[in-house]
Amino acid sequence: MTQEIGNADSLLLASQPIFDKHDTIHAVELLYRNESGLSAEEVGEAVATAEVVYQLSTAVTQRVQAVKVPAFVNVSTDILLSPHFLPVSPEHVVIELVERMVPTNEMIETVRRLHARGYRFALDDFAFEPSWEPLIPMASYVKVDISSVEPAEAKRHKERLSHLNLKWVAERIETLEERDTYLQLGFDLFQGYYYARPSPVYGKKIPTATLHATALLRALYQPEPNTEEIIALIEADPELALKLTRVANSAFYHPLAPITSLRGVVTHLGLCQLASWVALFGLLGDAKSEHAELALTRAKACEMLARQHALNEQDAYFIGLVSTAELLLGVSRQEFLECLDLDTTTTEAILHRKGDYGSVLQRIEATERHFAMREFGHSGERDQLLALYCRAHDTAFEMLSTILAAK
Image (cartoon, rainbow, N blue to C red):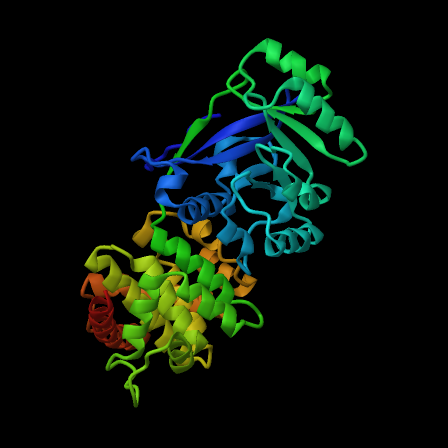
């Protein structure tokens, strides 16, 4: 377990390996950590889960373990019940259902649906309460905290459930004797300080606003976006809801009457414009004004150039904006894109400058350099693009004013 630093220095999370009976790493558990020392309960389970899920979806496991093993991750009830759940393939993750969750009918049905999609579940700190019985057939793992369950009790429950294809994990193993005791009981996997303490993982910290925005963008970029789900996701982020309402009521959109509902905001802006503003608020956050200005100018310039070539303007705008993720967030474009699940055309344009949209982005980036160097006075396409870029720059200034008013 090694720290991969580069220029990054923020504490992202911690990882702890889970070993099999042959002392081979079977999986890693990803644990919430932050530099202020606050626990997941103190920052809020939804925020903690969102941060761990983001790191999971951007391949953070490659930083903590070289071999390909599943990542165990605790999720909050809100995340579990979310219509978009995890942007991660089922084979890469095991979802831990912790004892403090309440197994309501809605939760049980959600687990059943996700299980049918291939997701695996672990019953964490399992206390063998009757209310959890409906979830046991859908579990792949049962994690037993050996500090709170006697070996005889663990053995009794293991024998009772022996007809199910479950892997049993002994947690909080701190001595060789404890390991041997649970090995003799037939446990399959082991986790605890005897093997390894949680190791810190460092990298670039993603703002919470960006985490919320990526979840909403995934919903907006579905083949058939569900308006009700989109409204619910906006409602879950009151700050974003307020900003979008202010934007919809701004002079930028000239509403005929005040817009006072989120449904009205979504209808008035439209899904394409809504996606653009969500990406803006998620990416810009507390970015320096000059960085925000460059990002908006690039996005608008890509939109304008796409219009000249009969390409989709909103797609070009989005591509131009997301291409600045490294500048605004300090994370690579690839890392940011991996949590959005976008189509190949968009991804290839941003990462490799391929296709029609990639060509648009490449030409605008070249124009940025000419603009920065004040290389005016050339004939032909360069000056035409510089004129377009200047118009985009003026529009970006207006948009920044709207954004500042929405804060």
